[in-house]
Amino acid sequence: MQIYNNEVQTSDTQEYIDIAKVLDEIWTEFLRHLGSITVLFLSIVAIVCACLWFRYEPVYEAYSTFVVSSGQTAEADIALALRLANSFEHGFVDSGLKSNIEDELKMDWGTDFQADVAATILEDTNFVTITVHSNDGVIAQTILELIQEYYPDIAKQIAGNITFTSIDATGILTDPTNPFQWSTVILEGCAIALVVVVVILYLYVTNKKTIHSAGDIKSHLNASCIGTIPVTGFKRRKKNANPLLVITNDRVQQSYKEAIHTLRIRIEKVMEREEKKVILVTSSLPNEGKSTISINLALSIASRGKKVLLMDGDLRAPSVHKYFTNEQMKKRKKGLSDILLNNGNIKDAIFSPSIQNLDVILGGERIEDPSRILAGKQLQLLLEEVRKSYDYIIFDSSPATMLSDTTAIAGMMDAVLFVIRQDYTKIQYAQEGLALLNESGILSLGCVMNYAEAGLSHYGYGYYGSRYNKYRYGRYERYYGKED
Image (cartoon, rainbow, N blue to C red; front, side):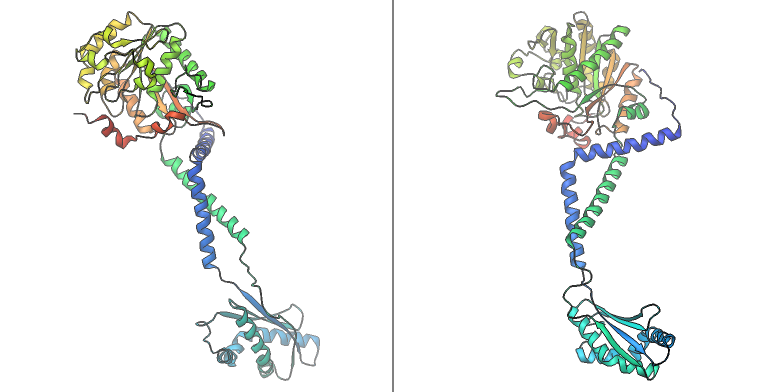
């Protein structure tokens, strides 16, 4: 297999690229899962708002400012006010004022109600302010009134013959000092939700170990990315519109068609230089779009006047037939499995779907364990025969990582194109698949990044989008059956 060397990069550049890559992946995943993220975001905001609402306790503040006068100098009055403020807490308890307040309210302080009482002095004045904080406005006001009534006498016991006069006090308390503000709470909830979403996306991106970019293919797989096939959709639906994702379908977007043609040009250049004909198309796992790439690559080459034979070699789950219309499928005959089992000849299997320069051999009947059949001489003889009649043979095989089907036939092929689905293909599985193919000595055309997303505006795979998500690695064995 052809090996591609990585360029040497400095640590500073590598660090920058890693950060940029993570940010790019986070943004891609954000757009890809926008609906789910929106639901999660709003749920977190709702939970935060609910928690803050249930934990909210209003705080009411009642205060009264007193003037302390001893009939002496202003400096003496200031010193006296400072003395009273500093000893207030001690005197409030020892003088019995706290107990008197509990008796008046007929409630136990700290059990039946919560309140904090403090005294402060206005700097360089003889003004003492006594403040009461409580979660009940009525209680706060009542405690202050009782202090106003009893504390002047207590102050005289502490400081002697003084005048302790109230000059300012709060009236009826109607609003707490910390009103519950929904706008602030919602903003706090949004901030927390944003942090949670970013952390989740970061953890997901850094732990998913999938291929995201051409740089990943080069650094992790030591291979080149020779093409990027974008996410695409269909143009506006028409009556009896063609639902197939093929470049001959007028409803498929032009950007997708151009990407396929670019891939074809690069492949043809290598194949002509190496004088090769047979292209093996595979991937590491199912649902990466290898069959879609195979059929569109065949159509693109055929459109250039080259005679092409497309063969469905995934005998466990043949799918090439799904890319042709019912009218085209009326011409189908026997499949590859029939030839390999000696139930038909090449002429019986080849059919033309009314597309110029393109012939097709479908998979035929599904076979549970085709490894031994594919590895036999029958397939080799078939390839030798069709090489004489076609410029290119494109062989759509089963995924290379889990099953031995592809590695068993790799030596019969001329070159391999490895399909990777962006943010789906696990690095480990891609490495294993390429390593297995490398052992066969087959020429590597490189990798093609399929289902690639870029920018802020993009579409899904349209009709085939849901089919892509149907299977995962764990279901692959059930889908294809077990190997012996």
